[in-house]
Length: 395
Image (cartoon, rainbow, N blue to C red; front, side, top):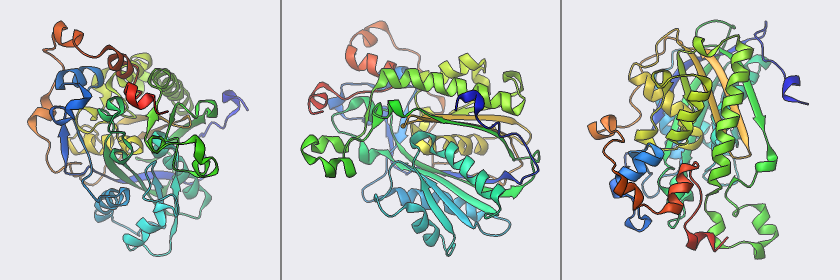
Protein backbone atom coordinates (compact mmCIF):
# COMPACT_ATOMS: atom_id res chain seq x y z
CA UNK A 1 0.00 0.00 0.00
CA UNK A 2 1.40 3.39 -0.97
CA UNK A 3 1.12 6.58 1.05
CA UNK A 4 -1.66 7.73 -1.26
CA UNK A 5 -3.66 4.56 -0.49
CA UNK A 6 -3.59 5.01 3.29
CA UNK A 7 -6.76 5.87 5.24
CA UNK A 8 -7.54 9.57 5.34
CA UNK A 9 -8.71 9.56 9.00
CA UNK A 10 -11.48 11.93 8.00
CA UNK A 11 -14.09 12.93 10.60
CA UNK A 12 -17.01 10.51 10.79
CA UNK A 13 -19.96 9.58 12.94
CA UNK A 14 -17.64 7.61 15.21
CA UNK A 15 -16.67 9.09 18.57
CA UNK A 16 -13.60 11.30 18.61
CA UNK A 17 -10.73 11.53 21.09
CA UNK A 18 -10.95 14.84 22.94
CA UNK A 19 -8.09 16.32 24.95
CA UNK A 20 -9.24 17.28 28.45
CA UNK A 21 -6.07 17.30 30.55
CA UNK A 22 -2.33 17.86 30.22
CA UNK A 23 0.69 17.79 32.53
CA UNK A 24 4.46 17.42 32.36
CA UNK A 25 7.31 16.74 34.74
CA UNK A 26 11.09 16.80 34.56
CA UNK A 27 13.34 15.61 37.39
CA UNK A 28 14.63 18.37 39.68
CA UNK A 29 18.29 17.80 38.82
CA UNK A 30 19.14 20.52 36.32
CA UNK A 31 22.34 20.09 34.27
CA UNK A 32 23.43 23.26 32.45
CA UNK A 33 26.01 23.07 29.69
CA UNK A 34 28.71 24.36 32.02
CA UNK A 35 28.32 21.20 34.15
CA UNK A 36 28.73 18.69 31.31
CA UNK A 37 31.76 16.41 31.71
CA UNK A 38 35.03 18.18 30.91
CA UNK A 39 36.20 15.07 29.06
CA UNK A 40 33.66 15.77 26.33
CA UNK A 41 35.63 18.84 25.27
CA UNK A 42 32.57 21.05 24.64
CA UNK A 43 31.68 24.40 26.16
CA UNK A 44 28.43 26.19 26.84
CA UNK A 45 28.59 28.47 23.79
CA UNK A 46 29.25 25.60 21.41
CA UNK A 47 26.42 23.42 22.74
CA UNK A 48 23.97 26.33 22.50
CA UNK A 49 24.96 27.13 18.98
CA UNK A 50 24.95 23.57 17.67
CA UNK A 51 21.89 22.19 19.47
CA UNK A 52 19.97 25.13 20.90
CA UNK A 53 20.17 23.52 24.36
CA UNK A 54 21.09 25.58 27.43
CA UNK A 55 20.23 23.03 30.08
CA UNK A 56 18.62 19.63 30.51
CA UNK A 57 17.29 17.55 33.40
CA UNK A 58 18.69 14.16 34.36
CA UNK A 59 17.11 11.81 36.87
CA UNK A 60 18.92 11.25 40.13
CA UNK A 61 20.17 7.88 41.40
CA UNK A 62 17.42 5.30 41.79
CA UNK A 63 14.82 7.23 39.78
CA UNK A 64 13.02 4.98 37.29
CA UNK A 65 11.01 5.83 34.20
CA UNK A 66 7.88 4.71 36.03
CA UNK A 67 8.59 7.27 38.76
CA UNK A 68 8.52 10.15 36.29
CA UNK A 69 5.50 8.63 34.54
CA UNK A 70 3.67 8.46 37.86
CA UNK A 71 4.40 12.10 38.68
CA UNK A 72 3.14 13.35 35.30
CA UNK A 73 0.07 11.09 35.46
CA UNK A 74 -0.72 12.12 39.03
CA UNK A 75 -0.61 15.77 38.01
CA UNK A 76 -3.08 15.36 35.17
CA UNK A 77 -5.44 13.17 37.20
CA UNK A 78 -5.44 15.66 40.09
CA UNK A 79 -7.35 18.06 37.85
CA UNK A 80 -9.77 15.36 36.67
CA UNK A 81 -13.43 16.36 36.59
CA UNK A 82 -15.23 13.16 35.70
CA UNK A 83 -14.79 9.37 35.73
CA UNK A 84 -11.32 7.92 36.14
CA UNK A 85 -9.58 6.57 33.02
CA UNK A 86 -10.45 3.02 32.00
CA UNK A 87 -7.42 2.65 29.71
CA UNK A 88 -3.76 3.48 30.34
CA UNK A 89 -1.13 3.77 27.61
CA UNK A 90 2.59 4.34 28.21
CA UNK A 91 4.93 5.39 25.40
CA UNK A 92 8.58 4.80 26.26
CA UNK A 93 11.92 3.56 24.94
CA UNK A 94 13.35 3.24 28.44
CA UNK A 95 10.96 0.93 30.35
CA UNK A 96 11.89 -0.14 33.85
CA UNK A 97 12.20 -3.75 32.62
CA UNK A 98 11.85 -5.59 29.28
CA UNK A 99 8.97 -7.57 30.79
CA UNK A 100 6.33 -6.78 32.00
CA UNK A 101 4.96 -3.67 30.32
CA UNK A 102 5.06 -0.55 32.46
CA UNK A 103 1.45 0.55 31.90
CA UNK A 104 -0.24 -2.04 34.18
CA UNK A 105 2.16 -1.18 37.01
CA UNK A 106 1.48 2.53 36.51
CA UNK A 107 -2.29 1.94 36.53
CA UNK A 108 -2.02 -0.02 39.78
CA UNK A 109 0.22 2.59 41.37
CA UNK A 110 -2.35 5.26 40.48
CA UNK A 111 -5.10 3.17 42.07
CA UNK A 112 -7.06 2.77 38.83
CA UNK A 113 -7.84 -0.90 39.33
CA UNK A 114 -7.98 -3.57 36.62
CA UNK A 115 -8.11 -1.30 33.60
CA UNK A 116 -6.80 -2.02 30.11
CA UNK A 117 -3.11 -1.04 30.00
CA UNK A 118 -0.27 -1.49 27.53
CA UNK A 119 3.01 0.04 26.37
CA UNK A 120 3.83 1.63 23.02
CA UNK A 121 7.35 1.25 21.63
CA UNK A 122 7.69 3.79 18.82
CA UNK A 123 10.66 5.70 20.25
CA UNK A 124 10.39 9.47 19.83
CA UNK A 125 7.18 9.01 17.80
CA UNK A 126 5.58 7.18 20.72
CA UNK A 127 3.35 10.04 21.83
CA UNK A 128 1.93 10.48 18.33
CA UNK A 129 1.32 6.75 18.01
CA UNK A 130 -0.23 6.81 21.47
CA UNK A 131 -2.68 9.53 20.44
CA UNK A 132 -3.75 7.40 17.48
CA UNK A 133 -4.09 4.30 19.68
CA UNK A 134 -6.17 6.26 22.18
CA UNK A 135 -8.39 7.60 19.41
CA UNK A 136 -8.89 4.05 18.13
CA UNK A 137 -9.78 2.73 21.58
CA UNK A 138 -12.30 5.51 22.11
CA UNK A 139 -13.82 5.11 18.64
CA UNK A 140 -14.08 1.33 19.03
CA UNK A 141 -16.15 1.81 22.14
CA UNK A 142 -14.15 -0.16 24.70
CA UNK A 143 -12.64 2.97 26.26
CA UNK A 144 -14.36 6.07 27.56
CA UNK A 145 -11.37 7.89 29.00
CA UNK A 146 -7.71 7.21 28.19
CA UNK A 147 -4.63 8.24 30.15
CA UNK A 148 -1.64 8.49 27.80
CA UNK A 149 1.77 8.96 29.42
CA UNK A 150 5.08 9.38 27.57
CA UNK A 151 8.13 8.99 29.80
CA UNK A 152 11.86 8.54 29.31
CA UNK A 153 15.01 8.31 31.41
CA UNK A 154 17.50 8.52 28.56
CA UNK A 155 20.34 9.33 30.91
CA UNK A 156 20.44 5.60 31.77
CA UNK A 157 21.25 4.77 28.12
CA UNK A 158 24.01 7.33 27.55
CA UNK A 159 27.55 6.11 27.01
CA UNK A 160 29.82 8.24 29.22
CA UNK A 161 32.26 8.40 26.30
CA UNK A 162 29.65 9.57 23.77
CA UNK A 163 29.54 13.35 23.98
CA UNK A 164 27.45 13.59 20.80
CA UNK A 165 24.39 12.00 22.38
CA UNK A 166 25.26 13.17 25.89
CA UNK A 167 24.81 16.88 25.22
CA UNK A 168 21.32 16.36 23.79
CA UNK A 169 19.36 13.59 25.52
CA UNK A 170 17.53 14.10 28.79
CA UNK A 171 14.77 12.80 31.05
CA UNK A 172 11.13 13.72 31.54
CA UNK A 173 7.49 12.69 31.28
CA UNK A 174 4.29 14.13 29.88
CA UNK A 175 0.71 12.96 30.32
CA UNK A 176 -2.60 13.70 28.62
CA UNK A 177 -6.15 12.67 29.39
CA UNK A 178 -8.44 11.96 26.43
CA UNK A 179 -12.19 11.33 26.60
CA UNK A 180 -14.77 10.12 24.14
CA UNK A 181 -16.43 13.05 22.39
CA UNK A 182 -17.59 14.28 19.01
CA UNK A 183 -15.65 15.37 15.97
CA UNK A 184 -15.20 19.10 15.72
CA UNK A 185 -15.66 19.96 19.38
CA UNK A 186 -12.79 21.85 21.01
CA UNK A 187 -9.92 19.51 21.80
CA UNK A 188 -10.96 16.77 19.37
CA UNK A 189 -8.17 15.14 17.40
CA UNK A 190 -8.98 15.90 13.77
CA UNK A 191 -6.61 13.84 11.64
CA UNK A 192 -3.55 11.58 11.84
CA UNK A 193 -0.66 10.54 9.67
CA UNK A 194 1.47 7.57 10.78
CA UNK A 195 4.30 5.81 8.97
CA UNK A 196 7.45 3.76 9.27
CA UNK A 197 10.49 2.67 7.29
CA UNK A 198 12.07 -0.44 8.79
CA UNK A 199 14.96 -0.37 6.34
CA UNK A 200 16.44 2.30 8.63
CA UNK A 201 16.09 0.30 11.83
CA UNK A 202 19.82 0.46 12.59
CA UNK A 203 20.10 4.25 12.35
CA UNK A 204 18.80 4.78 15.91
CA UNK A 205 19.17 1.86 18.29
CA UNK A 206 20.41 0.23 21.44
CA UNK A 207 22.14 -2.78 19.83
CA UNK A 208 22.30 -4.97 22.93
CA UNK A 209 20.17 -5.99 25.85
CA UNK A 210 17.46 -7.84 23.97
CA UNK A 211 16.82 -11.26 22.48
CA UNK A 212 19.29 -10.64 19.65
CA UNK A 213 22.13 -10.35 22.16
CA UNK A 214 21.01 -13.43 24.05
CA UNK A 215 20.74 -15.43 20.83
CA UNK A 216 24.17 -14.35 19.59
CA UNK A 217 26.15 -13.19 22.64
CA UNK A 218 29.53 -13.42 20.89
CA UNK A 219 28.54 -10.58 18.57
CA UNK A 220 27.93 -8.10 21.39
CA UNK A 221 29.99 -6.16 23.92
CA UNK A 222 28.92 -4.27 27.06
CA UNK A 223 29.07 -1.05 25.01
CA UNK A 224 26.11 -2.31 22.93
CA UNK A 225 23.82 -1.59 25.89
CA UNK A 226 24.20 2.13 25.16
CA UNK A 227 22.20 4.33 22.80
CA UNK A 228 23.62 4.82 19.29
CA UNK A 229 22.56 7.11 16.46
CA UNK A 230 23.88 7.76 12.94
CA UNK A 231 23.53 11.52 13.00
CA UNK A 232 23.76 12.61 9.38
CA UNK A 233 21.27 10.04 8.13
CA UNK A 234 18.93 10.66 11.06
CA UNK A 235 18.99 14.41 10.42
CA UNK A 236 18.02 13.88 6.78
CA UNK A 237 15.23 11.45 7.60
CA UNK A 238 13.89 13.53 10.50
CA UNK A 239 13.56 16.66 8.40
CA UNK A 240 12.06 14.86 5.40
CA UNK A 241 9.66 12.62 7.31
CA UNK A 242 8.31 15.28 9.67
CA UNK A 243 7.86 17.74 6.81
CA UNK A 244 6.07 15.28 4.55
CA UNK A 245 3.96 13.81 7.35
CA UNK A 246 2.91 17.31 8.43
CA UNK A 247 1.91 18.17 4.88
CA UNK A 248 -0.20 15.02 4.60
CA UNK A 249 -2.02 15.56 7.88
CA UNK A 250 -2.69 19.20 7.00
CA UNK A 251 -4.24 18.07 3.71
CA UNK A 252 -6.38 15.48 5.53
CA UNK A 253 -7.55 18.15 7.96
CA UNK A 254 -8.28 20.64 5.19
CA UNK A 255 -5.78 23.16 6.52
CA UNK A 256 -2.93 25.04 4.90
CA UNK A 257 0.16 26.25 6.74
CA UNK A 258 -1.52 29.65 7.08
CA UNK A 259 -4.27 28.03 9.16
CA UNK A 260 -1.83 26.71 11.79
CA UNK A 261 -1.58 28.84 14.92
CA UNK A 262 0.87 26.63 16.82
CA UNK A 263 3.31 24.04 15.50
CA UNK A 264 4.88 21.54 17.91
CA UNK A 265 7.51 19.10 16.64
CA UNK A 266 9.56 16.48 18.45
CA UNK A 267 12.27 18.40 20.30
CA UNK A 268 15.23 16.65 18.70
CA UNK A 269 17.61 19.45 17.88
CA UNK A 270 17.01 23.17 17.32
CA UNK A 271 18.41 22.99 13.79
CA UNK A 272 16.00 20.20 12.85
CA UNK A 273 13.10 22.21 14.28
CA UNK A 274 14.14 25.33 12.37
CA UNK A 275 14.55 23.44 9.10
CA UNK A 276 11.17 21.68 9.35
CA UNK A 277 9.50 24.98 10.22
CA UNK A 278 11.09 26.67 7.22
CA UNK A 279 10.01 23.91 4.85
CA UNK A 280 6.45 24.10 6.14
CA UNK A 281 6.54 27.91 6.03
CA UNK A 282 5.72 28.11 9.72
CA UNK A 283 7.72 30.97 11.27
CA UNK A 284 9.36 30.74 14.65
CA UNK A 285 6.70 32.82 16.41
CA UNK A 286 4.19 30.04 15.72
CA UNK A 287 6.42 27.21 16.91
CA UNK A 288 6.20 25.62 20.34
CA UNK A 289 9.62 24.70 21.71
CA UNK A 290 11.36 24.17 25.03
CA UNK A 291 14.43 22.23 23.85
CA UNK A 292 16.63 25.02 25.22
CA UNK A 293 15.45 24.23 28.76
CA UNK A 294 14.84 20.46 28.76
CA UNK A 295 16.80 18.94 25.85
CA UNK A 296 15.61 15.94 23.84
CA UNK A 297 13.34 13.81 26.03
CA UNK A 298 12.31 11.27 23.39
CA UNK A 299 8.63 10.30 23.41
CA UNK A 300 8.04 12.76 26.25
CA UNK A 301 9.21 15.76 24.24
CA UNK A 302 5.88 16.64 22.59
CA UNK A 303 3.66 16.51 25.70
CA UNK A 304 6.38 18.30 27.69
CA UNK A 305 6.59 21.06 25.07
CA UNK A 306 2.80 21.38 25.03
CA UNK A 307 2.55 21.44 28.83
CA UNK A 308 5.32 24.01 29.04
CA UNK A 309 3.64 26.22 26.43
CA UNK A 310 0.23 25.88 28.09
CA UNK A 311 1.64 26.83 31.49
CA UNK A 312 3.14 29.97 29.93
CA UNK A 313 -0.08 31.00 28.20
CA UNK A 314 1.27 30.25 24.72
CA UNK A 315 -1.56 27.81 23.91
CA UNK A 316 -5.02 29.31 24.11
CA UNK A 317 -8.47 27.88 23.46
CA UNK A 318 -9.30 27.80 19.76
CA UNK A 319 -5.71 27.66 18.53
CA UNK A 320 -5.24 25.32 15.57
CA UNK A 321 -2.35 23.03 16.47
CA UNK A 322 -0.14 20.80 14.32
CA UNK A 323 1.90 18.06 16.01
CA UNK A 324 4.65 15.98 14.38
CA UNK A 325 7.37 13.59 15.53
CA UNK A 326 10.06 11.25 14.25
CA UNK A 327 11.94 8.42 15.93
CA UNK A 328 13.70 5.09 15.79
CA UNK A 329 12.18 2.35 13.72
CA UNK A 330 12.16 4.50 11.67
CA UNK A 331 8.76 5.90 12.67
CA UNK A 332 6.88 9.16 12.32
CA UNK A 333 3.51 10.49 13.43
CA UNK A 334 1.54 13.71 12.98
CA UNK A 335 -1.83 14.96 14.21
CA UNK A 336 -4.01 18.06 14.24
CA UNK A 337 -6.45 19.48 16.79
CA UNK A 338 -8.08 22.70 17.89
CA UNK A 339 -6.85 23.53 21.37
CA UNK A 340 -9.48 23.29 24.12
CA UNK A 341 -10.00 25.32 27.27
CA UNK A 342 -7.99 23.16 29.69
CA UNK A 343 -7.59 23.34 33.48
CA UNK A 344 -4.53 25.30 34.57
CA UNK A 345 -1.30 23.48 33.68
CA UNK A 346 1.54 23.57 36.22
CA UNK A 347 5.12 24.34 35.12
CA UNK A 348 7.00 21.21 34.08
CA UNK A 349 9.93 22.01 36.39
CA UNK A 350 10.00 23.23 39.97
CA UNK A 351 12.06 26.20 38.89
CA UNK A 352 13.45 27.46 35.60
CA UNK A 353 16.15 30.05 36.06
CA UNK A 354 16.20 33.36 34.19
CA UNK A 355 19.35 32.22 32.41
CA UNK A 356 17.53 29.28 30.90
CA UNK A 357 14.58 31.46 29.90
CA UNK A 358 16.54 34.27 28.28
CA UNK A 359 19.65 32.54 27.00
CA UNK A 360 20.52 33.10 23.38
CA UNK A 361 23.24 31.88 21.07
CA UNK A 362 24.85 35.26 20.55
CA UNK A 363 28.37 36.28 21.39
CA UNK A 364 30.15 33.26 19.88
CA UNK A 365 33.19 34.36 18.01
CA UNK A 366 34.97 32.61 15.17
CA UNK A 367 37.91 31.65 17.37
CA UNK A 368 35.67 29.71 19.73
CA UNK A 369 33.98 27.89 16.89
CA UNK A 370 37.23 27.12 15.09
CA UNK A 371 38.75 25.63 18.21
CA UNK A 372 35.97 23.05 18.52
CA UNK A 373 36.58 19.46 17.56
CA UNK A 374 35.63 19.31 13.86
CA UNK A 375 34.36 15.75 13.97
CA UNK A 376 31.87 16.36 16.80
CA UNK A 377 30.94 19.68 15.19
CA UNK A 378 29.81 17.84 12.07
CA UNK A 379 28.08 15.11 14.03
CA UNK A 380 25.92 17.44 16.09
CA UNK A 381 25.33 19.62 13.05
CA UNK A 382 23.88 16.54 11.42
CA UNK A 383 21.45 15.90 14.22
CA UNK A 384 23.59 14.29 16.92
CA UNK A 385 25.42 11.16 16.28
CA UNK A 386 28.05 9.22 17.07
CA UNK A 387 30.31 8.38 19.80
CA UNK A 388 33.86 9.48 20.26
CA UNK A 389 36.52 7.52 18.35
CA UNK A 390 37.15 5.32 21.40
CA UNK A 391 33.51 4.31 21.55
CA UNK A 392 33.23 3.81 17.82
CA UNK A 393 36.14 1.39 17.94
CA UNK A 394 34.16 -0.90 20.25
CA UNK A 395 31.23 -1.26 17.86
